Image (cartoon, rainbow, N blue to C red; front, side, top):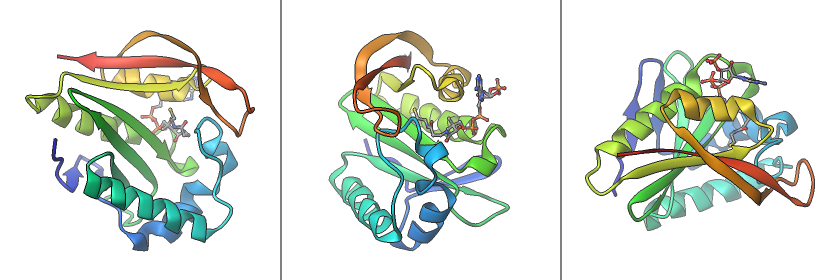
Length: 177
Ligand SMILES: CC(C)(COP(=O)(O)OP(=O)(O)OC[C@H]1O[C@@H](n2cnc3c(N)ncnc32)[C@H](O)[C@@H]1OP(=O)(O)O)[C@@H](O)C(=O)NCCC(=O)NCCS
């Protein structure tokens, strides 16, 4: 699987991130405890942490282990979120995060739909899936709106350190062809 470095949707550019995006990423969402509440990572304490994560993201692009895309509105040329594909043979997991002022406008659904559509057009990809915490209905709703179906409950699946140190239950959603 070799995704393009840029997708375009009605309102968004989804593009390979670069180190210069770090300040916008740090400021817009990575240091925000409310945004990161249901993530498996804790809010970034400083911009150096964001630069470190960016390096890992770019290395993953080179290795083909994960492809992260900066979410950039066409009418506001700065990064407001991130959406990623994690390939594993014939299946791909997606994950996403968005800065708080932009929630509830359908933006992540638009981004996730573009990636999912592209993925299902690839001959060797049969399954696109995502998981979310059982108490994160906004994320579950995004999955439903892109056509994924809830397949089940993954018990004690993920540690979300912003909530507690014990593994919590997740829902798993997927779309297949
Ligand atoms: C989850 C997240 C990515 C959604 O992005 P978004 O662009 O706001 O999503 P959309 O606007 O496309 O859709 C959100 C849907 O969830 C619904 N929703 C939001 N909060 C909700 C709640 N508390 N209960 C039920 N539904 C809720 C919205 O009404 C909308 O559905 P609708 O279009 O049917 O009305 C964003 O809220 C976010 O970044 N959260 C923090 C990070 C995160 O949790 N990432 C996912 C980890 S699995």
